Amino acid sequence: MSFKFLRSAAHRSFALAIGLLLWPAVGWAQPGDTIAVSVDQAKLVKLPSRVATIVVGNPLIADVTLQSGGIVVVTGKGYGATNFIAMDRGGEILVDRLIQVEGTDRPARHGVSWCRSRDL
Image (cartoon, rainbow, N blue to C red):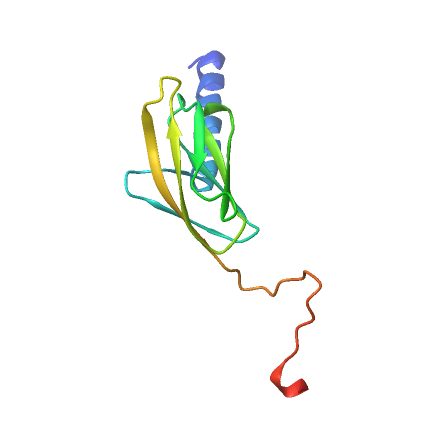
C-alpha cells in the first residue's frame, strides 16, 4: 500500500465525516414540505443550484435570503404562515413552499415586563 493511496483515503474519509456532520444542518426542500421556523430564528434550506429569484408571499412573516450554491436562509419575522417561490433565470418555478413561523419557548425581551400571576 502506497503513502499516496493512504493520503487520498484519509481525504475521502475526512470529507465524508464533514458531510455527515453538516447533513442535519441543511435540509433538502422536498415537494409539499412545510418549512417550520421560530420567530427570530433562522433555518438553512438547500434548493436547486440554478435558483435565481426568490419571491416571499408576506415578508412581514418570513425573510428568505438566497446564498450561493442554492442555499437559502429562512428567518422567522412574525407569527403565521406564508410561502416562497424560487424561480430560475427563465422564470420557471422550481420551488413553491409553505413557511410556518411559530413562537419560541422563551419570553420576548422587547421592553415588556413579564409578571407572574402570583405577583398580582
